[in-house]
Image (cartoon, rainbow, N blue to C red; front, top):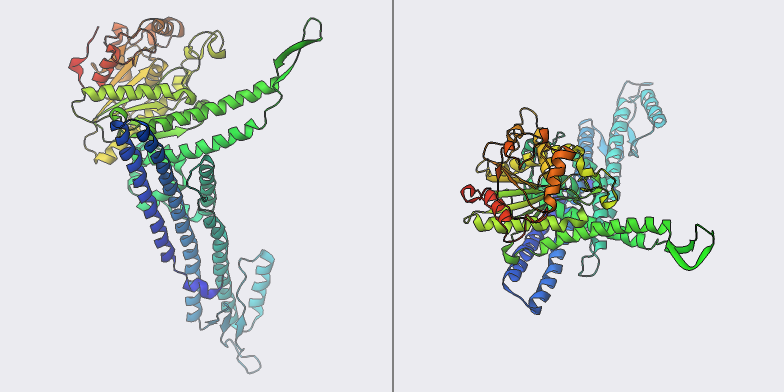
Length: 615
């Protein structure tokens, strides 16, 4: 880049362009929300038939287009701001060098060369003449710098040394600007969509690639942003976010959606925006992985060799070990993609039977322990009057998350029925390495199933505690520290053990878990002898038990696994819980529609304690 171009460069013009792209991004975001949570929800709630189905399909594609535009335009905006910062830094260096050169009596030519006046002590009766120093070529290596210093020290005119300094500074500024231009031109050039109206998995993979490339180039810009607190403390995170400008928030959302989506303490709307990008990019990436892996399918069968004769048995074949390993990975990839589709399916059902907007406030295709991570809310938990948080138990995996998301929906419908017009939100919280087996030899396990041991709950408990603190801080930031609502924490099976360890993981001055009520459903034990040992106030601990295999879970947890202190579990009278009536016929039936067990849970979530029926 030449001197005239850098002098004429106006960073503000690119910042204005960045603002324009951000406006388009915000407009696309609003349009996406209108399509997905307004128009489509209205159609689902009021219309049926082929025409309605066709309209929903078209609107779904339109919503995907708006989401893609929102994400890419936000990324362009961030890239332009980063480019403007890089160029502004170079221009400030150039302006400072030109100003200093003029003050020293030097003249800078259009090519960047610096002319210096005569000066210094007379030599043979003459003042050393002035001259011209060519513009520098940028940062020099040690040898070149040493030779330059030697030349300056030997020159009779002291103005020569000043001119050399100015020429080097000008050269550094021009090189910095040239490098910035060369860096950003190709990055900005690829930030464009293909020439069709279909947003595919491949498009979202491209978005992920674009984000990585922009992030690499935006180092200086990112360093200029206020840094999130290293501690990750939800209160500090909430304060940090509230202090950011709209531009800074947009930059973090576009460059670090995975980090923002995982930050406890941020509003649900913010985390949802970030995690939906993570979901879309992950869906594309895993589909690419699956497609590539499918092409590598090895030989499926080989001839069967009799272990008795050592001869090949004609017409008999067995699966090869190579194919079994290949198929195992294929099923894993398919399972994760299926889990992501189940989350998308929940988005697509907003409005059905009055189902509120969904908020994805935590997502990872891998999560902790390779199980995946899903935290999904029905309704906005930051503004709800009553919020129910459901923690699933043994065997929870991303690929099967539909059942647990369904329980969250069922709880919303039932709680909304008893909320007397107040707003309700329900959350499915799955962010821990859940044990896979509850029974001996189940799912390939051994004699001692994983659910017998507390280590999974002990490891995952602090994460739940941290999330609950974040939920509280998000409500404070949205409400202005006003009404914090009524929070009910429900655990099923091993999820209740996790809740117990979450409560025990808290240290002074954290206090008890920031919830109003706790419900233990089919609990094998909460690692405590009494509810009071977990900091749960008298009258606010609730428990349900069921028939069939639920008795085996509770008895096994009590007497075999020892998941309750002193062989005590929540449905024992001495634990101190309100034992609610339940008609659940087995361990998984507590959320059957029309059941007493579901009704009682919903009444607690809605704060209608006097209507709960007890044993």
